[in-house]
Amino acid sequence: MTTTDPRPSDAQLAARLQLQERPRRLRRTPALRGFLREAHLAPHQLILPMFVHDGTEREEIRSMPGVYRHSIDGLLREAETAARLGVGSVALFPRVPDALKDPRGSESLNPEGLFQRAVRALKRELPDLAVVTDVALDPYSSDGHDGLVSEGGEILNDETVELLVRMAVSQAEAGADVIAPSDMMDGRVGAIRAGLDEAGFGHVAVMAYSTKYKSAYYGPFRDALDSAPRAGDKATYQMDPLGGYREAARESRLDVAQGADFLMVKPALAYLDVLRFVREHFDLPVVAYNVSGEYAMVKAAALAGYVDERRIVLETLGSMRRAGADGILTYHALDAARWLAEE
Ligand code: PBG
Image (cartoon, rainbow, N blue to C red; front, side, top):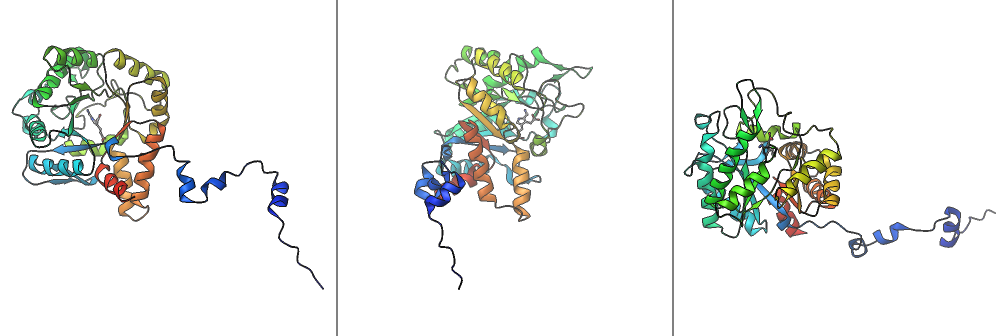
């Protein structure tokens, strides 16, 4: 006759495993798991980047399925949807017609230009929405660089900064709430701050693209604006991807000293460690830019059926919050806000 061993008691098993702690106890039910959640994601933490163009129909961006260049009317409709979903801020970028691009980016200062008209329309129709405007020459420049280019192909820092200040004031006059210099010239944050103050825009905030890498993840954005550099690359002003924390600290420190209201780490996903570092060493709000290439990769995999888009997006944005982002610029903002409302 054979006897089967009785199942060992929990106490016997625990003794065999020499377990002191059982983390799984708090993962047993949704209610208990709720206590372990440290990162919270809410629509008001998201900033929706949007593209505006001169046409009347919207155009989908080839490398960014679901993202469009909007007419001003289309922009208003999408921004209204964002606001309804609780996304309180949009970041605007113009697709400037090639015919209006020149080496000095002159169109950027046109008070009746597409960008200024779009900002005015947004603030007129949706006054509560925070409008973040981009300061850099690349959308307007026939050279496709963020700064002025010398005959010899050098990026001219101080001459560029003078132009950026005028661009920032022009955007503030159109109604921008937050000026976001994405150009990486030295000294531009302090110059823009002084220029805004002098022009009576002391209430307009500056969101500094403080830690911005020279990244391959910007490819789809350059498709959206047709703004890729015509010659050379951005290595003399954007940071080396394998640069370290000291350079991030230096750039952040300089922007704090020059009066920035927000710091940024961009791109986000490949630089979450840098985001955490900046979060721990500075007390300004930090935003992460979940850039176009990060969006494109998720979209491509989702459209191929390789990943679950909703879960991937919420997990990714959540990781940026956990790493320390107070805000996230993301092309997924509308979808994410909808999904969050359903949860
Ligand atoms: C340029 C600018 C870029 C982005 C925002 N502003 C691209 C670049 O530096 O070449 C990238 C945003 C994205 O990829 O989503 N001033």
